[in-house]
Length: 484
Image (cartoon, rainbow, N blue to C red):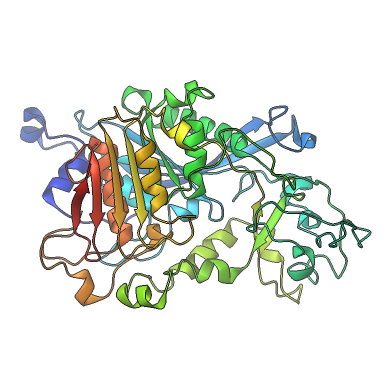
């Protein structure tokens, strides 16, 4: 258990009041002997054990096996919390590549002070935060015959005539994010020693419903530990995690999960596809393990063109990608010893699960009842369709929903959780104060906008004081309404 001692200054008086959760009562104002804002934050990591339900994993060999879900919690600490300050809790669900404790708790300096940690920002605003590593990620279970076996990385593809020339077998993939022949390209020297291996599991590691189970378990745990008002949490999904959250809120399938969620936020969301799992014509990927190299994380998100790079100078925070890789390797004692040409000096590889995607589309979004916030960077080139993906979710929400907000951020990419603003001319708003920033101070970048928006949404169900509508945050951080 580690306690962070850095004290963060409130950005504005109004935001401070949001962080307190409510105005002081008359008694508390006079007494002045209780805390309305946290005095510190506390970080813990713990495991939630469970037994894998039969029929849930694509490969039945994992049925009934013991497993554990690792949860990274950053919570507010009070010496004597005022009774008027409500308990609030949020469960944050990560995407395809970067697990929860890194995506949401990047321990790296942020522009303007503090760190690029969403969890710490929220905890200092009085919100208890829970970021699980879903099954197959971080320190959660990966299974000996699953992602722990380097022989479960991809083999070469079948020949054009459909014949497999390798005695160890050949592979197929239904998605280019799961490339073929990684046993040769990344693992040949270390740890496979020049030999290809037959798979101990020959199908995708998971599907969306596997991770809905994880989300449900984390929600129940967060309610037990944090005791939030009305026994409900806010649920946040980032990147592919948004698809997993959308599926979890599909009441036709998971009414018990939806009943425990008071609000939802989708960040840089993936959206679309079938409601239920549907095999592609060529079949699903035939291996459970895929790998990423250091450069893929360190180089991070990029703008779509040199022109956009020039217009958005200063959006990257130098060194943040390196820090993310270091934290990822800290969580993967096996993967950090794979890769490279020398076993004594491994390059390190990020182990990830293969999966099928489904469960969050117009039909699912159209039945949501929770107040919904959608945020996306206008320069997101990772999500198919980019920024229009966020608009598609917003447009698919029930027309009768009176509490839905779309926020699109200029000069922000898919990695907006870690992005700042260090270009003096661009980041200094001339016409108005940047959203969530004290008047007269420059915009600290997309990270500050996202965290301020989440704090306001979780605390009051509004963005920039509004319960509904579309907003654009410009290249200087100023938020303006753009429609309904």
